[in-house]
Length: 263
Ligand code: GAR
Image (tube, rainbow, N blue to C red; front, side, top):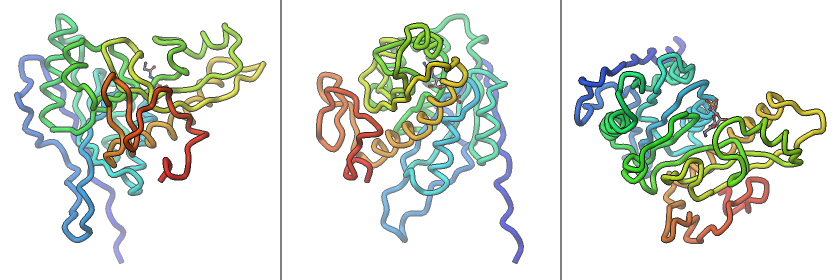
């Protein structure tokens, strides 16, 4: 029997600001929707992932989509930097990629407007920020209200912004971690859904701590994306996340999830 060939590497399209199609014709999505007629399963949720760098969280989502544990279809990966390694991860998985460089735009508003046009061409049910290192305009955030998730490497509301591991060490925290939250206009301030904690060792440095947090991030993000894709998670009234109809006044903890929540 001849071996199954790997997916053909996908092309990356780099958009100049005056060439953003509206809406984007979505011809670059090589991942065809999964055939569901035979199984009766609902079609996987189309998502768009935004990245700026390594894309290890993206990889966790790719792995979940590939092994069937996540009912999602990654319609496109968009980076604001052409050198983001996550683009390579996406290409290897046969996922279409786009580069929209913020440097090609005069201000934040025009970049975000172009980014919205690009994203919307893929008609995603969910937009996932996975290490997308941009402050978003209120218009962008409002446009994706309730279907925009972010992961942040701290136990929010502690340590919004950058250098979270260094700051946690400087404050002699004994616990640190990561949070997945719905995005609101406040930087790293949206309603928290799920957190993972790691202990801080006396001899930790920022890179060792970051590596341990990242391992937890790769468990955290797929769990939240799974809930959303299963239709179990939403942003409810008063900006409170709701899981299985229950409002979350506090973020859930990954290590304390019940079997029902994990199902
Ligand atoms: C992750 O640690 C993520 O939490 C962080 O960037 C890293 C991206 O890693 N995001 C933020 O700081 C957002 N405020 P990755 O590219 O390997 O997924």
